[in-house]
Image (cartoon, rainbow, N blue to C red; front, side, top):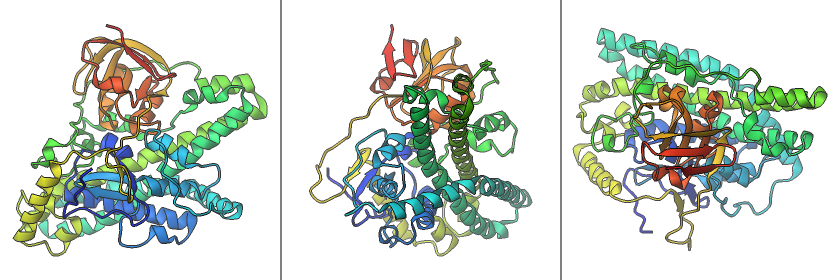
Length: 490
């Protein structure tokens, strides 16, 4: 593969050099503006480094000026697959395969970067510190939600009063809150893998054939998206961000407008029948005693961590939306044109903006980068194959069976039980989900946001299925969320 660096890119890590679009590829636009990346990549990078330091202590591979966990190659965001697999090798129960199965579509993990796996004493210590982080996650998320709400109120006040002199203050406050939101999201993301492995081990030990029913036992508790969907129609409310692309703040500016994933329009509320007895309750009742209590504890623990992961993401999205509202005004105040500010970073807009020559150079570099067809998987190691794409494995991520007429993103189903088939989907499809009987995506993994939401709503879902791109609206499609089977009936 001919690989070129755009001038606004970061460089690969000197030793951990395998990257994947992973979760980014499912939910972020295929290309992000430099401004958006400075609000996503940098604070996520800092949050991940802090997480590594908190659970593993100082690590040479987690320091330095190179990006370690997130990369921005030719205007497309990537996770450092090697680094996340590297973390798993330091924690009990976890393996690199668990990481790739959860967030990287089940691709094979890179060759270990460790000369020797840490001893049991070090792994025990890292595991205990990770559990400590997870225990503290809920109160920290609740505290941050109040701070984000206060920040949104400040943005409203500044814009309503035309108090442009306070825009710099908003930018400084927003930087701190974004770093906190992404830090909590990283904790929840990493913790979900550990909680899922714990549940799988416990259920597999306590129930014969238990690993075949774990999809039925993922019950996220108190996810924020249903509440956000209900509040979204309220003008000026805290859920207004779902009407806009989640990750691209320059969504109305070209060329970035061409790369955003269109948000769903809002639909009337619909009701979904809730079962009288959930699969979790049924299994607990059948096993009883201490076995049932053990299963219940792991299910609730996993559900709580997943809910907090989604909660922290919603807070980050609210922060990005707040920035979207005042960034053009801050740019104008700093003498930066409406067509130019997407090419700056937030630190530059707050400090000294680059001159016209540099902005034009970046514009040209971005235009060149946008013309390159970037793959989902990057191996920048010396001697790596020039063209390599790992095979995706279809996976049932939300249990149940559905046979219905297919619709695409932006379509409203004409009949109940429609099958939503698309490349990928995020929480902004929630308005349509009450009308949907199943979801099939071409991208995704078991901890895709759409997979978690479908499990909460009881909608069968299959991700990473090659047939998703061939399904046309109006075709009858069979979906089995248990086995991962998808077929076009007629």
